[in-house]
Image 1 (tube, rainbow, N blue to C red):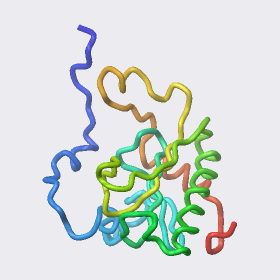
Image 2: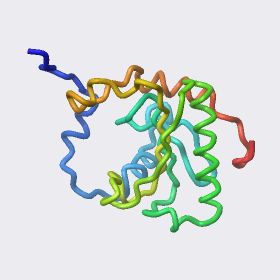
Image 3: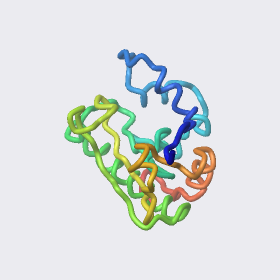
Length: 171
């Protein structure tokens, strides 16, 4: 038989075991209020109105989420300062990922609303997903699974070291 019998994905246990019930504030608000250090929560960078955090369920190595501190569901609910800061953080994330991981391309996008595929539909976030030729392999097609070749703490260190130095979002 040429199938995968066991695919260990222990780091997803917290997600699988969650009961899906609505808690106070989005996962991003709970992350910010956790009191944990950025190294533990994988918050790579904080700006005046937004922050960049590694996706702990990444599509590829270096998958970032850029999130406004304020919990809003849609991009048209941001004020002008938040909107500029959000896209500045996305841009800085691209710069840092180019320096730290040398991707060949990027997928950058927003899923607004549950019907659009938003898994955290109540809190807007932008996905910054680095891509390489061949990064989607047989696992996705055969086992409907992804393989991520680098641990999150290693990605965190590499990316944090390359984040552009800015003053109030201006670099």
